Length: 441
Image 1 (cartoon, rainbow, N blue to C red):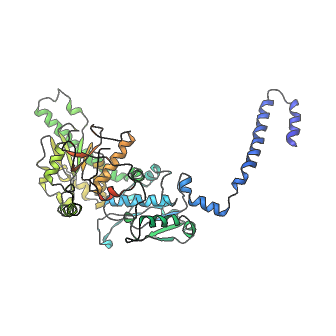
Image 2 (tube, rainbow, N blue to C red; image 1 turned 90 degrees about the vertical axis):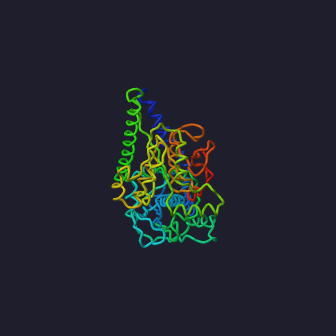
Image 3 (cartoon, rainbow, N blue to C red; image 1 turned 180 degrees about the vertical axis):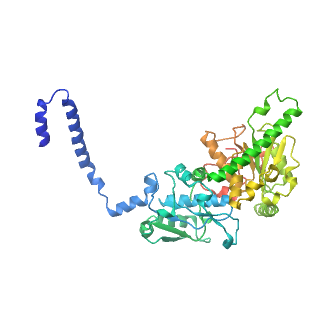
């Protein structure tokens, strides 16, 4: 009625203001009509509300900040721990919950669990950068965010042959409903995350790994090591230029310094393990001797020589001076001791040492590794992810940069096989346990 009265008085309003008032009235009437239409749909029953909350991961972006998943301490080697962490993140994502920041293991013990040295995630990786990079996909939370208003719901992971992938997935789906859904924290017990059944595609793992940035103090150490490698490369190039009396002719000393990183698996325990592996799998493409690795790496022509070859090797090999000898002309091999960076590594626990070496390898201009090594596989996955971001889904027959090779597999040209991760793979099985089925796309 008031609207009609106002309309009657429009004739007394100036012509300049009349169109503005009419538009405002139309907007108000439109909002009233719109609310009348959608009101029935806004009344959601409690059962419907629970459904939408339980399936929020599938319907809406983002992860709930008031519901959490807690997992056991993550153990074993660096890359097993990274896989376990990513699997825990994806499990929390499936449940539409934040993952409470897990405890990693600074030491390397496989059976003596009481000797494990726990280290919090944010002592190794940057907590804030992880959440910023993975915003809307997965989320890490601190324990201070938990209100403890309800008892944690204990989710016991099954084990044994009868605990199939399907049974595990069904358990997770059930945990999105009922008592588990109402609990603030779901506490997963039993096997640690690396041994959980895998339900997630490689691209999801790659996205989480891409969110991992080293803690600033560790990143500083990585930069120092790479700087030492490049200094060695500059020295080698300078000496080569002088010996050929062409320092001023081709300007080679002014070119950017590149390096090759080789993950050299020739330790005694590895060779014993891989020989047995070859016997069981009836394969001859798992183990490689030092001579075979040198021969394969020498056939890579991606980089201009002289070039530094950084050897990422186990500490037990650092006293073996022979690993840096026998390399072809123009390939100058260095390991930590020869490079003069043992002080950087010696003051760090096992996990940090591995994290530094991983980044040195991942950032190399060329990487060469073993396709049955989890370390090598995750380095190649990191490099493949970077190539995909550059729009390069193949490295076949051309130098696309960030080249990777598997020295344990013979390529079409007789050298090491070019290697990119299959980003369409539906699980992380081949990356976690190794494969000789690798290619350049």
